[in-house]
Image 1 (cartoon, one colour):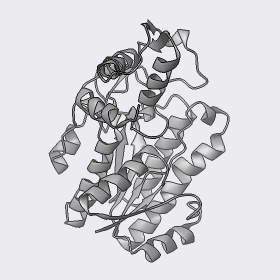
Image 2 (cartoon, helix red, strand yellow):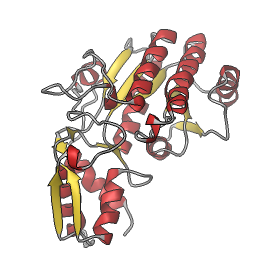
Image 3 (tube, one colour):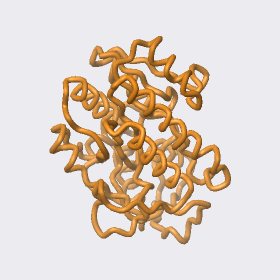
Image 4 (cartoon, helix red, strand yellow):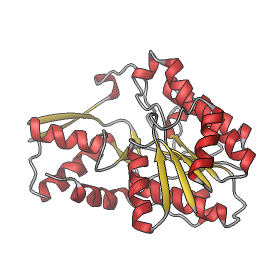
Length: 291
């Protein structure tokens, strides 16, 4: 199996490179300097020259607030480009995994979202990802759309690293406590993607939308509390006070779902992949982050 990843510098792409190396899987990640993802011929050429037998799309426009004023850029990378990738994969009958997000939902559900729940994105970012899902499955009905949520890693920009920085810099940290979701370690997403493409190459007859997110739900403030507790155990500076606040007290250009929980039962039934407890995986991540 030779895996081609579109996207090179993001959290999941970085994790894919590391997980593939650890497992002896041949994998090459291409960034914007390596391939024009808005050119179908360039995408096809990248597949040919890398000898790829499976494709994972980890490239995305993820600046949620910025997307409100950069709609065209968000839709280009989150919708147009994945649609072209799907066309290339369908023409060559290659397994294709496209990563999506909990932001395709409006957050009003009382429990975890299932794959077939109605989409109702609150902002441009979520709308662009929803359109990307539609185009991927339109052009390649055999593709896998894998939604995930609240991604963090020991590298890159994410909530965990931001909390660690604020813990070093401030005595008081205020965090939203009325949004809940499933924190998801990027290494686990990478492992899941590699397992899926391996199964697809082995002839597994699965396609469509699946969810993968960390097991267990928590608010952003609860997540921060767990981060600081573990950081303190590791001898790192933490704030004296963590203050829970409401979403209204922390206004942002883009609205966020109040409930981002994802049900992952379909993935478990189809591929035998079960989510890992977010609290346990957080400890692993923090132990890998240098002081």
